[in-house]
Image (cartoon, rainbow, N blue to C red; front, top):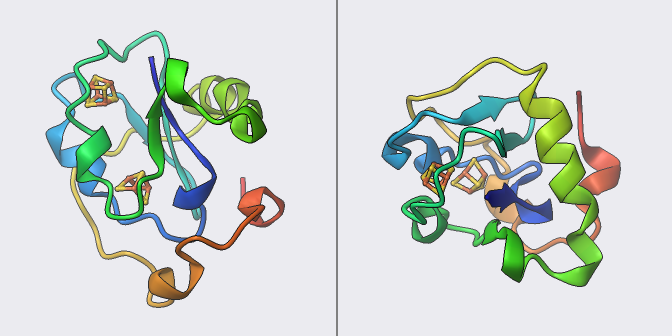
Length: 106
Ligand code: SF4
Ligand code: F3S
């Protein structure tokens, strides 16, 4: 599966959702997740993210392993998203800020 990682939090550009052939992105207040049972590993979303927040499970950095479980958990409760929307106004400022998990809203 592919996994949405830390840098999506508070950036949430949503370019990723438009290319997914199986519509397996789910949206929370300031973060998106991929449903691991629905992702077909096509890899189309990875290059679409302007802040490089999407990883293949195999390439997920060691310090972001918690996002594997987080994607699985939140994809069960958040609504599906298939159309791009505007990123938060301050998205640029949050690009690359480390340890954004503390800002995750559920
Ligand atoms: Fe969707 Fe493909 Fe990305 Fe999986 S890898 S979330 S199927 S676009
Ligand atoms: Fe997040 Fe990147 Fe998609 S910031 S919403 S993973 S395009």
